[in-house]
Image: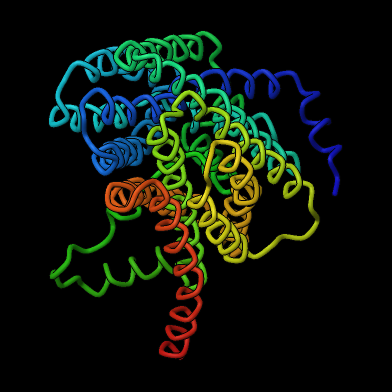
Length: 429
């Protein structure tokens, strides 16, 4: 392991400043998840399934809006591209806490659609500021700072919510995010190298996405636009073009996308499970303790994995993370839950790092950005599935059901996936 790589990278002042700005700008929305969940459950009187559905709707909005936000950065420049987000964050999150659940759903969808694209901006700028061997270490550092954000944000959100200020808290999230957007407009980190064309900047973004090891939501790509609608008969030329465009999509790459979806499902289900377990027991103020342990373990795991010389198969890492999540359902108090979160937390950053690196290895450079975009889509889809899945079981069987349901589903995916992959390979042969 070579931990000196981190020290060398942090010695670069623009990278150090970008990581710090990105970390601070992410804190408001990291608190929004806990605030929104507890607002729906405590203030609106809905169940955890309803709270999970709202989280899923917001996540879908983020996934659909991300490619448009990324394209705007490339075509219009960072400052102009951030203006819609700066306006919408304050407006939407000031309205959300004052409406019924039925109106809340479309509002959080639009909020996700127009969310400040801080994750993509930081990754894109890191792709310009770091090159060669530094890039992987830079994205590892970005993943680590994200985990630090999730130590701070949810804890702050829990304190505000348990004090009875979910309405004010959600409004502060919107205003704070808008202020972060204004600061980014002033800071204006580079999103393309000096002298590069718009097309070159897009290529740079694709290279950055190929190296990303962050667990944050990633971009969708426009490759689906070239698919033929179901039931239509495509001319031979179009079929040939589609086949060429998706030649990179092998059974192995598909299995990696399944791993990404499984990781997103386990992580978002665990998130909801932690909030439910402590809120049900009247210990909402202690939510931050569990998130601190869980995210700190992920930071340690990411540091260790980023310094390793040999990768670990992502499906093995996901199997371990999912299996180790199940015992969290049998915690009896806050400290037991926090300690049980350490082992699955250690594997959080590594499973996402390993899967994204494997996709980058398997897909040729000219299609790697597109493949990483679909990888991000799979991760986002898993996040959107995990929260409502855990919520349904929490409402039906109690807080333990959330951890057990997503843990068992993750284990099943790891066990069934390789069997289906081998069967598909035999059929193709």
